[in-house]
Length: 198
Image 1: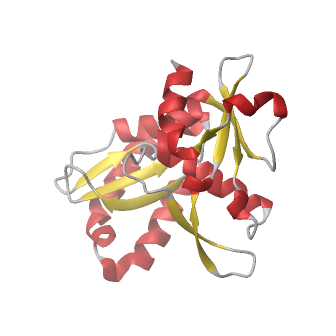
Image 2 (image 1 turned 90 degrees about the vertical axis):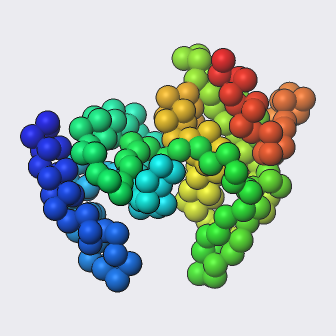
């Protein structure tokens, strides 16, 4: 695997100017898809960097084995003057809880996760199950609801903590009456989750 990773970074270094050019975005996407998917079912993205001009991010798609692999890949990344590399999606502390998705009628719709509620449940292996009541997602099918709440959790606590500490995330229509005293607004999710796992 080491030699495959080194070959990838040699290839990336050779082609990185293409990935920085907005006029070659489609070509870059196809090239990177082919390379990265050869490692597994990763997602990826290019964004503005914090320390450098560009950030290349792997996403292990909430998969523990892929997280270990993406950590290995980024550990072997070259030091390029315009690029920083991340092995999973970081938390977004300044996220405003709003996001857009296509609804069932293929119309782009804005949703506000600040309207949601959640409970945290400790499982036998000490990981956390998360139930989220999101009444404003009724125009999405179940798969898209799952994507929406999964993205929200990743944005609030980051993908690494999500993979290591979360047993499962699911949308619910109502909470069990016995859990009502543990229902909180989604705006408190980050602080309550971090406290819960300590």
